[in-house]
Amino acid sequence: MAYQGSLTSVQAWQDLQQHHQDIRDQHMRDWFAKDPQRFERFHVEAAGLTLDYSKNRINQHTVQLLLELAQQRGLPGAIRNLFQGEHVNRSEDRPALHTALRNFSEREILVNDVNIMPEVRHTVHRMEEFCWKIRRNQWRGYDNRPFTDVVSIGIGGSFLGPKLASSALKPYWDSGLNIHYLANIDGSHITEILKRLDPATTLFIVQSKSFGTQETLKNATACRRWFLDNGGSEQDLSRHFTAVSANVQKATEFGIAEENIFPMWDWVGGRYSLWSAMGLPLALAIGIDNFRDLLRGAYAMDEHFRTAPLAENMPVIMALLGLWYVNFFGVNSHAILPYDHYLRSLPAHLQQLDMESNGKSITLDGNQVDYHTGPIIWGGVGTNGQHAFHQLLHQGTHFSPCDFIVPMCSHNPIDNFHAMLVSNCLSQSQALLQGKSEQEAIEELIASGMSKAEALVLAPQKVIPGNRPSNTLYFPKATPHTVGSLIALYEHKVAAQGMLWGVNSFDQWGVELGKQLGNRVLSALEGETIADDIDGSTNGLIRAFHKMQQQ
Ligand code: F6P
Image (tube, rainbow, N blue to C red; front, side):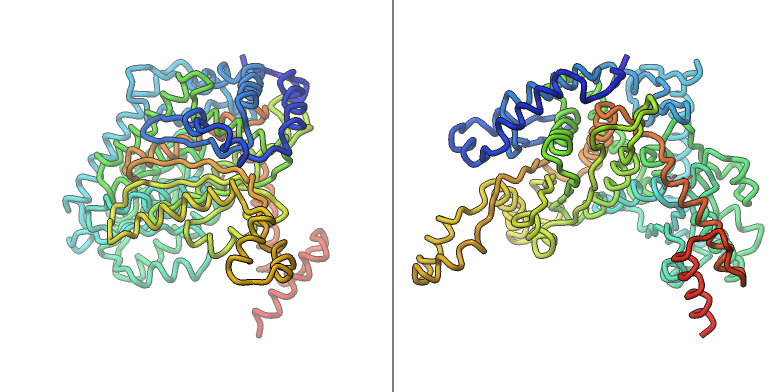
């Protein structure tokens, strides 16, 4: 049973507070100078990934106290509950069993006393058949030409994970199909996608767990209209429109043939759904064997998370380090910095994964937390970020722990590009660690020919405090297996943090309010009259919309 009650009353929490006082002014640079074994001591391997966490504001005592906190919070039990299908999503009274989607073991997984594994495997088999037919041109468009384009229509978790994995695995796209992701409700986005396409060779996949999401339904309706207006007929719809949804009734009402609907289940959260048929556009691009390798990578990380002792458990270590900064250093953000063009969508996916999961302030017991929870997740691809926001990382008043993520080998080894890319990655975390003292700055300026007096004036601008923490996650290459384990690693990190903070990482009630108010504002934007029940600012903006629409 997971620990219930206040996190801050746990003994290890009190000990960590004291410990933070003891070490907060110590510099990592000194720790590295004293301990040549620091890298050896603070790194861990799992499922094809290695995490170097030696550049963190920790010593062995910190790790020990953090592990005690995890024990005292009942983390091992909470992990067991997750995998065993307990109703960890309490507010919706359901389990969170995305791990079942990549369960390659013989273990049964029960939901309401029914083993869900046969249905999970049957769905992968259906995906396989579907991919086979489309990729081998057995299933063609209405004028018998093979499909050239697939438009995935979905948003949030029904978009970000598949999009990330599709771009991460671009080197494995071997079908010649172009995959497009249509998410936003923005006339410009849909126009830009559709204007390049031929309806006769375009396949649509409407991806919505609920089949009730405004943006997705509007986009799907517009795509259907475009299809019918540009040569497709009502009879052709079933050849060109498929869906992935847990709401078969709504999908069929929309006009998708029942045999073209792939299932989703309420025991899979949207942001954890890449591994289900929501991954269909990806599977079409890379083939089902590569898709299965992605699942295997995630499964390897699941097994690690489920069975490794806490002290060697990569997601747990990352979770505890994150908590250390949020709760004891008062940090409120965390940067994701992939040094790989193919992983450029990772920050956006992790933003949803983390912020929709742990952006919570009420505990599972229904109490207001008296500590901070999930940080703001942001980031971008290196080296581009170095010429944009890294300045703040080095010298700003805020400090944001960073995850540097880097494959050691490139899919496209040209000249010494990759060595240059990796050298940038390593030297950024090095710079964050060691910084530059005033004395070093003065000596550097004098060595460059400046007078001592001038150097003394300029040097403070050049001081870089350092002591800024980062993780480096590395692996040989971004393959389906490593991408699968990487994404699963973050899923488990987020889940472990949710368990420690005692919040429900699997619901998202905050998103609902925006949806409700959105409908009210839409009717005001489309109506002539301004509603009295809308606040003055929003009313002013609605009037501006009316006025500018008429110009
Ligand atoms: O953004 C809120 C959200 O509910 C996500 O959790 C979900 O992934 C997304 O909307 C899309 O929902 P659906 O798949 O039901 O269209």
